[in-house]
Image (cartoon, rainbow, N blue to C red; front, side, top):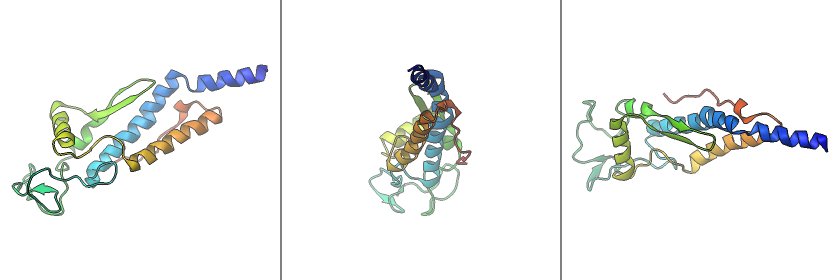
Length: 167
């Protein structure tokens, strides 16, 4: 019985709040941040649906308003362009905003970026953050790693995220 009690104590310690916070920051927060950056590169939401314009009249497969002729960068709007990717400023502003032992929050930094992201998700109906089927599959892989580590007696804080970054 003493061995079983020690094993239960070890399991309890392996998922202590400090270990959960480390895992949420290093693995889950960075994974979510990178998935959002991938959305910008693809011009798609978490389900793989293309971001589109909410204007009454659109062009180029509903991506842009007919009235939208020149991008903020000065480039002409053409069919091969993807919205919200003129510069990496908005995409790069998505960071881990807060983390504790029960949750991690990822979002844009800076008032301008928050305003643009809010408009994109509410007025334009283009989901930047949040979960879709693709993102859920990635997150479930990370959660399953936690259970594997837990079952093998390894603290979840020792899990590392692969060093793949969306640029």
